Amino acid sequence: MTMTPLPPVQRQVRVALAPERAFELFTRQMARWWPFRGHSGFDEDAVDVVFDGRVGGEVTEHARDGGRMVWGVLTEWQPPHGFAMRWHPGLDETEATQLRVTFAPLAGGGTEVAIEHGGWEARGAAAAEKRDQYDHGWPATLAAFAEHAARTTEVAP
Image (cartoon, rainbow, N blue to C red; front, top):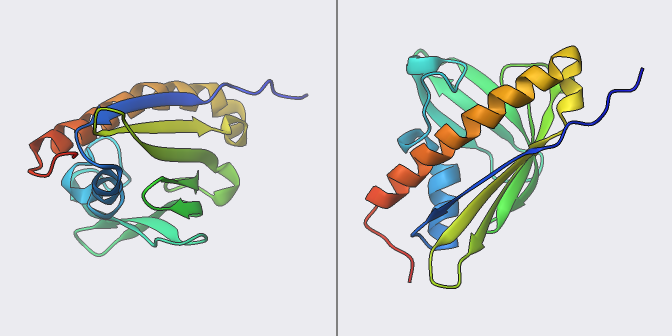
């Protein structure tokens, strides 16, 4: 039986930062804004997320006690334009979905950060349920990013 492909989750947010700064904040300073509670493997014990910034590099969550959880593997790394990865936080790589995050300059200044998260079929029978969870989770995560970006002192030119 062939599963009908589920549409990707697509969300975006605009921030008043240049693409370079938005990319840096999103990837290199994730611990400053990511809502770990409820959106991570270690929950409130999480302390950082580290991007090994290269194709084939891992994205890992780190816990207070030294624990480490792979969130996925980068398939594209193009600062400051975006990145893509096989997303499987705490799961076997065979269950990886596809995540793409882009950073596009806006005509009046600032950046649109857009997420496209698809490939839900990899989650098998739970695909629709997982897609629905992320459809509700990504807006909260992007809101946390936008709130933190608004508090930064560096604004887009």
